[in-house]
Image (tube, rainbow over all chains, first blue to last red; front, side, top):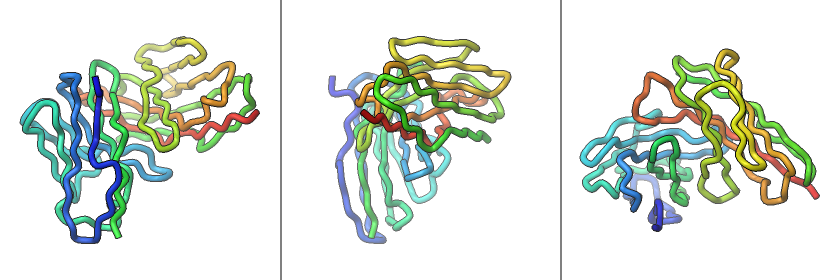
Length: 110
Length: 112
């Protein structure tokens, strides 16, 4: 099992550009989450999904959109990137009481 | 809302014991979690407490007091590889989707 994978690992965007971060899990988990992690602020939930075809807003959803067309994939989109979205993005899936995290995507917006 | 506090950094010597405290204020409570995160890596699950008391798992133990809104993670027989950030997270009863609220993390530095 690969667990949770994320692509890309690194990306540099210019302000106003768009991109999609892909998260994939092969553990057949229903629940998936997107977080961002910034220095001194811990992990903050952006959006989450409780199953294929469902999405919901987390703590900091503004500027992001998500889709869960297939159970194993959870996509995070930035329509018009801003410097404030420079961060490390983690995807996670959940089984019972444990969340499994992907390796992260380091995004810089200039 | 939820407020989770933990110290920013702690330093300890190899072979020693370190206790990382976490206090929380939540509108409901349905579990407290500890995760370990090495620099540049993903967080990994360490422990889960939902009832009061101590849960022991090898060199790591986690304690919970719901009435005090308090937990600690105890790391015994410290090894250099234990140098990492330790994240405290709370799940609220009002939420049934497993969402977690994370503290900012405690950076543990283990010195020789």
